[in-house]
Image (cartoon, rainbow, N blue to C red; front, side):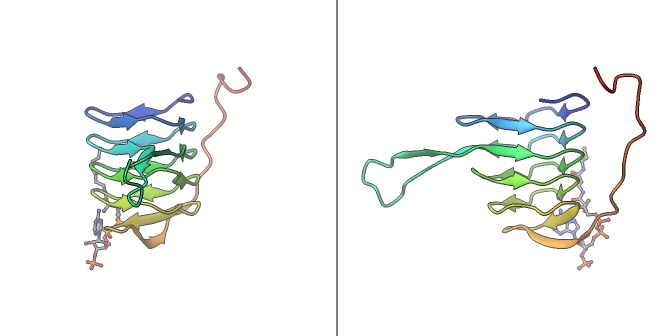
Length: 118
Ligand SMILES: CC(C)(COP(=O)(O)OP(=O)(O)OC[C@H]1O[C@@H](n2cnc3c(N)ncnc32)[C@H](O)[C@@H]1OP(=O)(O)O)[C@@H](O)C(=O)NCCC(=O)NCCS
């Protein structure tokens, strides 16, 4: 987790592989970040783990599901209850299951603070 990040109540951060939450990103309540799955054609159901990245200033809204290997680019929004198994583009807004792009979000830059550089 980088600085200015928020993980809300009841978020399931199932980090069998690395889950990186970049600066300013928010993960709202009841969201699931799931970094693993199983090989369903293998009788032994072999475990497959893949890292997740939630980019700078991105927002994973309430109850959303982020699957293994997903990269949520800077500023992207995954709407409430949406399910993402593919990568989200920078500043894109995604909703639904499977998540589909709704629109583009207006990018922003936060002002520099006294913490910058430390
Ligand atoms: C993703 C989100 C930010 C989009 O906001 P927005 O761009 O202002 O979107 P709008 O409200 O204008 O809705 C646009 C369309 O998308 C649909 N839509 C919006 N959010 C949706 C969602 N999460 N799932 C499915 N459809 C959604 C709307 O029904 C609307 O459809 P229509 O054009 O057929 O009427 C917002 O809807 C959302 O999911 N917010 C998260 C709420 C939340 O988690 N709150 C807790 C905060 S801690």
